[in-house]
Amino acid sequence: MAFEYRVQAGDTLWDIAGRFGDGRTDRRQAVYEICRMNDITAGTLQSGMSILIPGTNPGRIQTGL
Image (cartoon, rainbow, N blue to C red):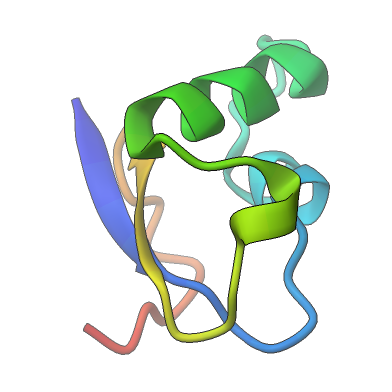
């Protein structure tokens, strides 16, 4: 299961993984999963991109979608 998130200016994969993490998964593993699901690297992440985040949308953050 995954949900879509629109990358905001200043977002990093590390921040996104921490923001949406469940607290049980290592953040490094979460970053790896986000990269794998979206075929991206930290260097290719850009504001405005829509990416898939593993898990369910916690509803805490507006995605703009």
